Length: 492
Image (cartoon, rainbow, N blue to C red; front, side, top):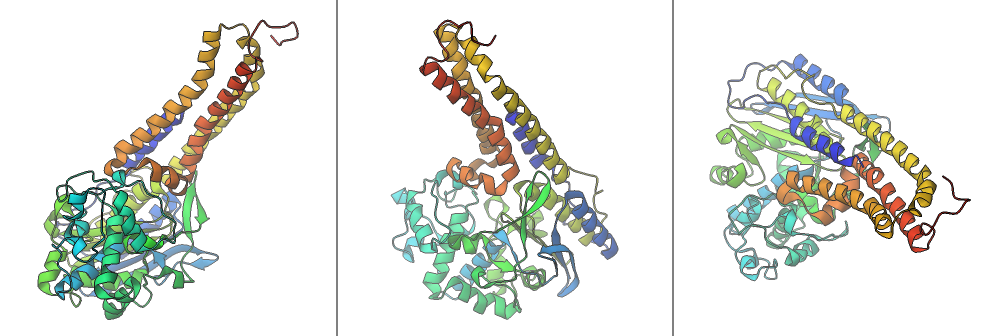
């Protein structure tokens, strides 16, 4: 019954785990690479991160490459170790769409129905208004909050787009930034429709090969040496299988390496040079609502351009700094939801500071994901002890219940259901308040055990025993085993 404060703790930590980063617009000094090494190893030790791969770009050169830790199964991480890059995939999808627009094959401001005539959301008028530009900038009016559809992992992009017929708008089209993965699934399908090529083939021919990204693919089923991914269970990294949703490859499941993404960062830092004209490169990185361009976040008036990726078992950061002519790439094979908010931000902020010629924040600053996990473990242990004690006391309740009035007995049974239900309502209302338009009860329930398995266990331990005790009490009450006068044989 103590789940409420534990979830409150998680929410506080998610907010508090982000430490102040160096200003991207400040003049950059020399990069202290020994300090960079020390900062990364200290953060890995603090949080228990399995593996990290780093690339630093200065000008048009890859200035520094380094890998740390394990890729699982006895392999060290290298700068050529393939990893899932999560939502960094969206930047590639956006690039492909803009390339097709530059070639005159696609009008970004034309309704999606121009190219996919059957495209629908649950509002007919909005269906005719949504454009590729809206999807690129996450301003279509669609969000996770209005989309309660579960698809099998092997569903196609076309099936995902068709499922939007059940998507309810949570804002008028074009009025609000609402990050929405399925919007980029739609763009992925749009690339295939307009180009006449498979999405993976298009990217290979028009992006990966031109940039020399030999170890990058949008066809993850063909990769056999991807790093072992890890989640976290009560503070300890645990190996897990990274699933792939086929319909979301263009939104979150491209595979790449630190070296390949360094080449990509050089091109993107130069306005997608070699892949787009100067004019179209400027459009790609023009900030819209929410500071979002096309597949990139734009900060400090463009002094910092960045995106990241968060899979269930991997994390990616790609940050570009135009004024200092620098960039960095970070890949990690750890993907617990708390890591994405705490360890990932602390690690990226440390790297950013050094890359911009400044001192990294003290490693002692901010919470450790390990501490959070250990605190959760202690809390679960306490809840288990309380549950065992309560179950042991059940026979005594049956005897006491026989002395109760029917109304008092009914309330005593009901409270065993009311308290855990109230806990769940508070937990998910707080999660909804934290995630806002990105919260959907159905999809969050399904993904809960995948992105926060230890918090999922805590929630079960904090509520399920009460429900079970309530059912037992209810059965006893309905069958007369907890009603009527007590006999001499009843325990005291």
